[in-house]
Image (tube, rainbow, N blue to C red):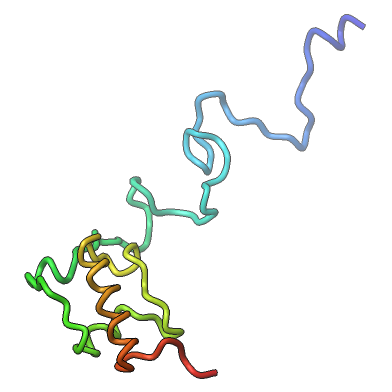
Length: 117
């Protein structure tokens, strides 16, 4: 009985990592939240994602014209939904103005509300 409680050897199939060693998920322990390898601040990823900059701020466009359909179509998805800021990189104020311009263009039938199926 005393032999069983004092020392327990790991089984042949099980492997143990040293206490301070970092595993595949980094020093935190388990797998990455996204489940994708690479990327992150370590610089091991394949792609470098640049910081998105507002197109309207860089070109110093203050008023977004609702009549400029080509400009507005770039911010409307194929299904007719307005593309969110996190995908386009437009700043908050210009996103609001862009949304208003898209809605105005839809109301006077310059842009479709939705695509045909």
